Image 1 (cartoon, one colour):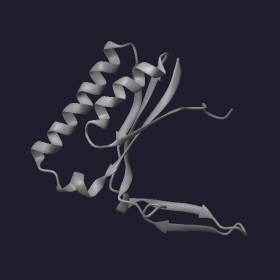
Image 2: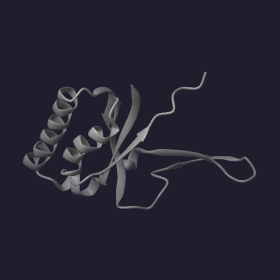
Image 3: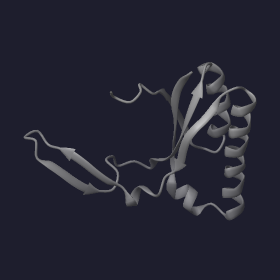
Length: 119
């Protein structure tokens, strides 16, 4: 099986402004996503909801090799990475169909194959 990461990018201010009922409805979509994956032979092997981008730290090296650490996300954008799943699958086309469930929450869903851990 190939391992894929399913990245969820959305407007975190919209999430923070959502009522508890609206948030619960979005979580129900995640439950449906998990159920459909299992029914269709895919397997979630990891994942998590991420804390707000306000809590992020960014580490980067500039052109001369000096390492800088800054607060916050590395891009100025309304949309931020909000969570991810790691999914094993033999059928990426079917995985993409199931990911449509998550897209209905308003998030953008990006699916990428994992290259594996270095030896």
